[in-house]
Image (spheres, rainbow, N blue to C red):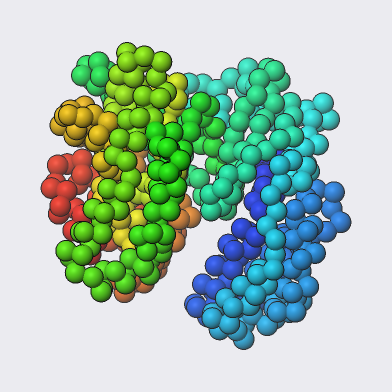
Length: 493
């Protein structure tokens, strides 16, 4: 499919949905790392030319208004700072380069488009009537049966309205109009390798088949809510948009009054822990008793019944409340164990969704998986999963000894009894490492002083310390029943 011109045009149009300031930050990080590694002048010039062509191109009918305004604001500054061909980069130190980039972007005003034509004109103009070959709606190849493309839904066009999320990368939600008269919503992720998210979703599907085959899990309706992830390249992909869902932060706030919401939103600032340096300083300067006291004070400032009240407000009667609560607890228990087995971190409130119709919880965004959040973040994540007072108060008076504990035990039992199947699926991470895995492998080799000369095609020298095999080995230990404390000790070393 990627050899068809129409497909290439489609992928290029999706790449335009990455905001230029975000793309510039990615280039900034790449070049800064190259300067630290003292790469050749030719390599730096090539990176500069590609960036300038990509972000500051003008005159093309497919260049968006957002990129035209970006080029008008920063192109001259880029050329003055780094040379018309990037020839000044080689003589710069990483610190000087970083300062120049901050100076260039300091006066740039971030665009907030609401129309598709403002950010990707090609998608806004697309109509299937203009092409002899059609484009299929992504995500129709499941691998479970023989594909029948003649019955697949094709793209008729795109809705003009888009939704820009407020997260760090500011991904866009687009609405694809199918030739079956239905709308399909996708979140377009750029600058990321979504193969890891796709593989984790497939692992969840394997887990779900194991749960369905177990009588107890089937009776308790223990399963993981999955969604489609379609990696198009190593830098562009689509994620199925789940309807009737809200992020957990927004859902919890529905159980608070205005004053409690204000306290909740100000908590990072009031606690004085807004960045990694704050955590490190607190660790170095405060005593253990002071840290515990501050933690309990911050935890107590958030209403422990907020999640309970949110479900109560959602329910039309007590029977509905108990049904929604039961489904939420079962889904969260399955998420906790599955995410712990796969070492998925970064479980903040924006990385959980709640289905307001079924009450089920959904985990999203698996960029920090297989212990990355514990091993590489400046402030390592130490908690295996999220089980805060708000979760526990939802099941009062039994708290963790009620639905959570029982469901987690059954989920872990089934996963361990099917460990060989899961490990076979995980083998793809070793055979075909993602871009992120290769980057983390290099970071690990630098940290440990080991040689980083590994075969990038997936072969290795047999050493268990090679990054992909090491991560799969950690999953094997969890599924094999090794004590979690020893596994965690090895991860933080």
